[in-house]
Amino acid sequence: MRAVFFLAVAMLAQARQLEIVFVDTEGGQATLIVSPSGQALLIDAGYTDFSGRDADRILDAAKRAHAKHIDAVLITDHHLENEGGVPNLLERFTVGTFYDPGPSADTDRKQQRTYKAYEAALAKQHRELVKPGDKIPIKGIDVTVVAAGGARVQTAGDPNPFCAGLDPHSDENPEEARSAGVVVEYGKFRFADFGDLTPSKEIALLCPQNRAGKIDLLLASRHGGETSKAIYAMQPRVVILNNGARTGADPAGWKTLAASPRLADMWQLHFAFAGEKEANTADTLIANLDEHCNGYPLNVSADENGTFTVFNPRNKFSKTYHAR
Image 1 (cartoon, rainbow, N blue to C red):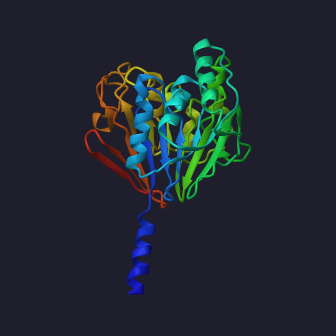
Image 2 (image 1 turned 135 degrees about the vertical axis):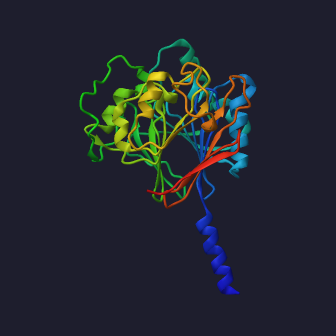
């Protein structure tokens, strides 16, 4: 009987998975990561308004992933599509610690209004500033900040052969350039979310050495906007685009991502109308085909050995990517 009990415990341990839900905020970001331990990290909170639409979708995702509360929230940058939904979130959910890269650098009046609402909402919350090299404590997984506040992690990496000829821009959005980016590890599985990190800051992180390492799953920076070929050194097997129907996934950025040498598939939260058929993935890999949609997410389940599965709730299609 004891042998059966210990076998059952061992099988249960092997069955535990890391769950990642790419919540549809229709052009913003809200990525919910639930560790096998049950602790949860939310990266960004989507937009405000829309009757709390994005907060409701996050709440639904958390319930489905059996997360009773959110242990940590990382705000990648102080733009309305990332931090706007925080006041709505706090009306619906218990949150542990908030992390962000520091005060807003964007002087736009609308963005400043959103930032002030964010600060007011956090008046009674625990808040910490992050810098490259910091760890966000989530039991059961390793979460490392690799970029924040315009700086990047100092660790060494393998030489990046895709850096030749890359020309950093000098006119990028100052707030997006300060975006916080993280690498999440569960055993051999590695996921990267660089928020709205600009191409120049991607180059700073990944050139001349790839300081992020090889990645199994990559969330496209800036919702699938302009990106740098420096990302090819990470060799992502799957790229997720958290785009809206008319936000992100611009054709030039999409084509750069699609040309990644080791890429198996790109999945999208929305069909991107600007890209038409030439710059959109197959319909089966798109969560929402219509502009006025049901707000379907994309779900990922990952094993410690590096194998992971992406699931599209709209059509119940899933695909498994085995450990390399």
